[in-house]
Image (cartoon, rainbow, N blue to C red; front, top):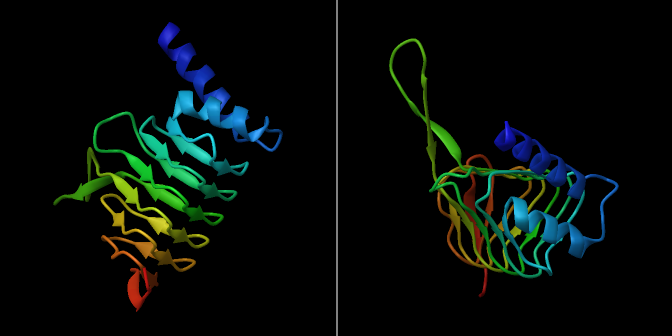
Length: 172
């Protein structure tokens, strides 16, 4: 029962920290640091952002806009690592969970598979981008709005679409 109450109080703290009636940013980051992983003191995280799990690392000078969702877990392999100087636009979803496709009546096996997500330094993730498990986005990469990232992206490049495809190499 104590463990359950602790989890509920923890979720309430995270929800409070990310609500519209938020405390000052530094205090918010300290609250999040204790609940989701490691959040840099210089990160700016807008309200109405949703976090699950305890394996999220947010680097220095990161900006996360409103309505983003970060689905991590407490288990190994469900890490979300965001480098320094990353800009994440509104409505972005990152999920480290997936299932194997199985045969038979139920295509999604009950066993959850976890794969990490890594976003390199200096990236810009556009609005409503979805980043799926097991993806590494190279340093300085731009992902266009509405893209779905299903595989690793090269550094210093521009990607757009579903699935995200490279349309331009940037100087880096």
